[in-house]
Length: 86
Image (tube, rainbow, N blue to C red; front, side, top):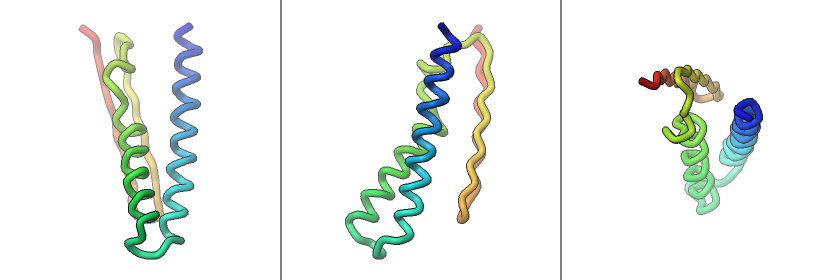
């Protein structure tokens, strides 16, 4: 059961990363400071927060380490979360 949950979480994360990639690619094609660009920038921030900082409730293992590294043309982000349940 836990394996299936992990697979679903991986699939969700992959979907969010694809959506994030599309949003970033679209942002560069839009006019500077347009309403659509501002909306996509906000959405990009939300997606990055969801991928990099998952809910604490989702981290229910006894001990886990999650490491995520994302490279973009303009920046590189790396986040590692270590959690131990006492």
